[in-house]
Length: 323
Image 1 (tube, rainbow, N blue to C red):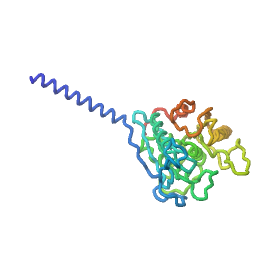
Image 2 (image 1 turned 180 degrees about the vertical axis):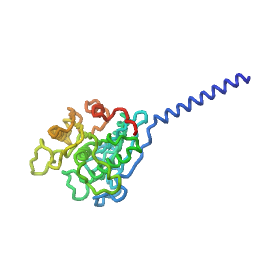
Image 3 (image 1 turned 30 degrees about the vertical axis):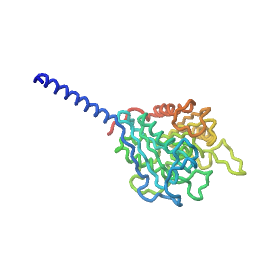
Image 4 (image 1 turned 120 degrees about the vertical axis):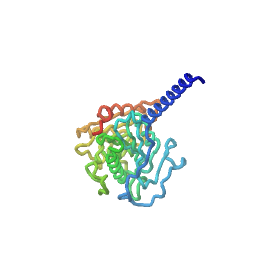
């Protein structure tokens, strides 16, 4: 090869290498981190009791539905953190509470898939594996008490790691589905009542979410009891709306056979009377448990409405500059 030709070939090879290296740098900059898991509690889980056996995934023969991975026997609550691509990151994070009647957790349908959707909107998705099932003596018609402790601690944990994870501590919300929707509302309305005694410095952080999203929530109106007539147009007696309750978005389907749409409608009216910023979307069809999966029904557009709502609340603007 002639010297001039060899020189040109070397330049071409170097350019190709630089282009490839540049591409790697771009990919690295845009790459979303791999999900990672943290335990919610550093030691014993407070106010927990009973022997429930090892954590497991329910077999299809005993699963409530066939369209989800159902986890039960949770005695060690965890957070699974899904970070968005760096070039999309808005600095907002949402703790996600899967549903399951406080007996199970619809882990993929209302957990992992929700986190993946949030990542596309530039939001860090934090899936909370809270304690299930109900412990002995906890009646089915009432919400289980333990998960609220897990949710409060989860919000504090995320807020305590905000700087480390590049999250704005004033952009941390909570979202939940079905029983998890009730849990999200409970976290948004019980932030002023500590559910457990402080354990460490993490518990010095606020557990008040900056917003909440409840999708087909249950337990917001009184549950039916044998031989007792109930009113479906009033909140359950254990629901409260304190001052400084954060904005809440409610989503439901009229034909929900599990948790009637009255849960969201009555909650919306109560929030409105309390002057809490709130928004309600009730779809004609959708049933229960539609998650964020796309379908031909209008209810599958609720994630778009949610993004618009978050933008209106100032939660999805440009990521604030670190100070």
